[in-house]
Image 1 (cartoon, one colour):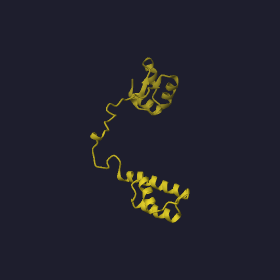
Image 2 (tube, rainbow, N blue to C red):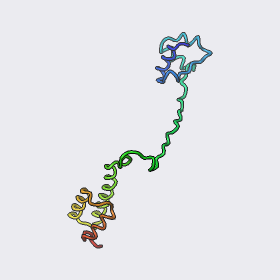
Image 3 (cartoon, one colour):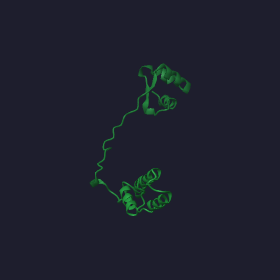
Image 4 (cartoon, helix red, strand yellow):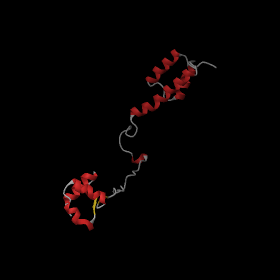
Length: 140
């Protein structure tokens, strides 16, 4: 069978040449087809078909991810920026909750917001302790 027909069929079907199936019983009809129109007719008749995609199973995809097999610098897995985001966002969210529930007033909110930006607090608990020590929380 001619490679020309396979090439034309591949371009018509928009697949690779290896996925084109040509009916071995109709070789004469296939050899006569020299234009894309002829190939399209043969595809409609079922003489030329597209084979399904081959499923490739990749071995070793699942790598060992334990602490002992990790390589690289201190922030190779979680970057310092990502760690910063993971601490700052919850703190800012917590501040907004406190402001909405009127446990802190606006000037206190601004001051604490800037302290969060400066990286003063490690966690929400740490910020809560700071507010209690400095008498920033309003009693309900």
